[in-house]
Figure 1 (cartoon, rainbow, N blue to C red):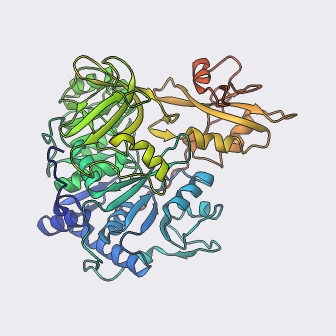
Figure 2: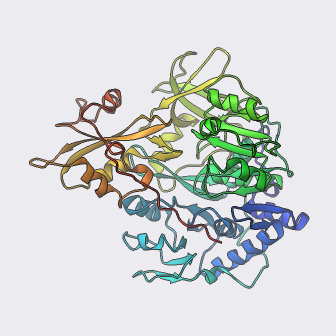
Length: 542
């Protein structure tokens, strides 16, 4: 992001990039998957075109949204690229969503067509599906759901491999994706991201703070985060921009990490949260020797993250990012200041401000606000949420909602979230959405969800509740009530029953008091009670 100009369509628009590499390097591998299967650029171009032509046959037009509810794998990539090839908007859904959270996303996206894994399809039968009319089922037999036209996977396989016709050329500022990020004072918000925005993110992931690239077409980026997160889409796009490769794995696994790196010839990976810590605590067994790994981005940068680079002879990096921005803070290679997120990249302005947007002094805590000198290099709002968009972009700066401090050397340090979002095991959790589902229990009058420190790093979820008059509640029963209602990572670990929740004079819950008290002697701990909450893995498509 060193130029003030919006990148040309040929540099940033997915269809242009895919056509270029499909023409120039058709036999080069773009993606390698866990089972060893691969997608070359030429094949991916043909698949994307066939998918795009099929979507047009299903009634999808340029600018329409299409929901994609699939695990990482070739079918998810194909769906994403096929949607963008016709200038439609790719809207991925977290595969853990169900119930009210799923309904909100489906309603907000306004899509008439969805591409869904067979094992997830039944969840659509339990919600109001708004404008959704057609569902293409991948990875199994389609089941009947009243009010929906449920189609087999063959509905995405047009016989035409010609470039799909467009009403007009796709522009860098057109909306490419809507990725849903956790709400805090309301439901999850859909981040409107243009091609220029995802391009800036991809460039940010693959270059240092001064804009000097450290990845090129010879590199392979391990994608170990889902494509419904920017942690999955960003690296995937970075390598499409560079004409390089990705190694798409089902999930991060400490035991098989080094063998997977070797097998896929991975040269670059992001280690998020406790991943670096887990790898440092692992006993080396020889499979990490002579590794092709060259670059690692550790987020956040811990002492163990710094030690990781020295132990394994790789170049370390760190940065700050969120779905709405484009890696605005980054470090020089091999940073040594633990917990620092770096400094603003070239072309990025960053300030720390108080509640009135006045800049705070060095060393004081303020909200990080950002702007770039390149148009469209960050989000252009939240889908169908004008008030939230205006609030986030007030006074011409994007407000991250995150508390930072900066030192005398200009290093930025993340302090906490001004928002009430909770981060657990790499997932952002909306306290609002947790509270909504908890309060659905008939015995509960009111609920407040807060983060408490986890022994594994990041956060655990604590819910403080007050009961309706005359009601009693076994906390274990509440856990079992919530299991089918929310994603596994959202189910609270701790439950604290209070007579009344602490309130301000204006009747707002004083969550800071709940965080301060943390896990008290009378707090129920589901881990200690032996209640195990596991994910329901969606089997990868092969």
